[in-house]
Each structure stands twice: as C-alpha cells, then as structure tokens.
Image 1 (cartoon, rainbow, N blue to C red):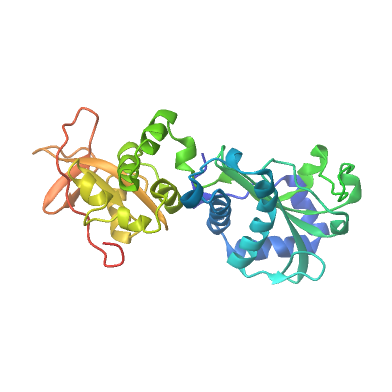
Image 2 (tube, one colour):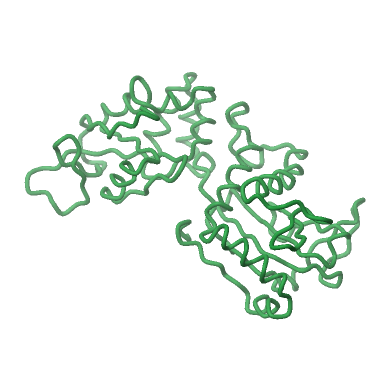
Length: 323
C-alpha cells in the first residue's frame, strides 16, 4: 500500500508527452499539484464525500453498497462541489471549473473507467476522478476529450465513456493512491457485529477502540458507531471511552502533536487530522529497553502483546479543546 504521506504521481509516458503538445493540460496539472503536492487534501475530500453520502450518524451505514441508486448518482455532483469548495476553483465558463485560466469539467466514477462524458465536453479538459472504498484506493487524472477516444452512448443524455485502449492518454495526477480507510467496512465481520450489538452508543464506541487497535479511525467512523450528536463527548476522558479503557491499559490518541509523538515512539500509526488511534500498553520491566517505548507519568510503557496481562494505563497529556 502507498502511504498517504508519500503519494507519488504515476504518469503514463504517452500522456506525459501530450503536455508538450497541450500547454493548458500542463498548466492545470501544475496548478493542482501546487495546491496539493501530496494529494492528501484531494483524498480527504473523497473520504468525506463518501461519508457524507453514507450519513452514518443518522443511518448507521458504512458500505457504499447500502446506498440507494439515486444517492450513488448524486455522488458525482457532491465530489464536484466539495472539490471546488476545498480548492476554491473558479466557476468555469462552459465547464465546471476554471483552473489556471482553463475550463475543466469534473467527472467522478466509483467504477474505474465509468466516467460519463457529455457531448459538450468534447474538446475540453476533464478531471477524471475514481475512488473505491472497498479497495481503499483513488485516482485523479486529466484528459483532453476527443470524440474518437469515446465509446458510443446509448443513454438518454448521450453521455459517453472513454475507450479502454485510450485510457493511456490520461495524464494522471495521482494513480491508485491510498484512500483513508473506512475501518468499519474493512474490519472483521465478527468484531463489527459485536460492536453494533450494543444498544448504548458509549458501549459501541468502547468496543470500537478495544477491538480496532493500531489503525487510524476517522471521526466519521466514530460518528457512525456512536449515532449521537455529542459523539466527541463519548471519546473523551471524564466518563467517555478514554476513561473506560484506561483501566484496561488502552490509550486513545487524537490528532494532537503530543499524541502523535507518543504514537511515533510506540511505533504505531500516528493519528492525522480528525483521526484517532488506540493501543493497549503495559509498563516495561527493569532492563527491558529493546522495544519501542514512551515515558508517561514518570513510567515507561510499551505496546502490549496478547500474552501480557492487563493493567491500568497512564493518562495522556491533556488538551483543553478535547479533554
């Protein structure tokens, strides 16, 4: 898997050559890369848009397959809107956006290659976006639309798709990059069933952080599990999951610099913005220095193994915005 912190643009040689022939294509590419060098902002928009459609806080849904057909159809519009909101693209004259002074249409498909191109986009640049939650992958590329590169269209809007043999003409901004994980979708079905078996939102959250350790958990997952407006209160200390699980030695780290530093010292994934990571720790024994460890409350702690007995864990550094 590609780490999101180190997303690389995989650009087809054939498509790269077209930049020399199409300066507008290169200008749009360069502008987007300047706005988002790593691709993290783009990936976050896609993650948030999928979660917006799932609306887990109200519906309890976590799987794209659970969406209604009309909701899936609406996904392209939401991706278009949310990308413009994130990057402040100007409105296009004939297409969706104006980027680097160039009209660009935005097309999203959950099925790779399924972008529906309207006849009016022929001759224009299209930003082709794909994301698949089941694969935790996404791509985004640019293509100057030519009629001969498109399949025939039989739908009522006469929209067309890009022929498979011409997808190598796409100038990829990011190809097969990592989409922030939908933990509920990818976790063990047995663990997921156990989590949702609880009637209490607090009990569900406690089990989420108990069963899903050393993995980044986004706020939308927390919101879906809690199904309560005050879901963040259910994570905090003072009666939330942090307090309940501290007795079992489980730390719930948030997106604070101090918590990220603790995660790094324990060699666990560090929570990024809007994320949490839980991990069970035990105090180290005298002379035990070879494992990753961190000092908290005047004692040294390491990640627990399955054979380590349970013991109360330390308090994490407090932050007035959360605790």
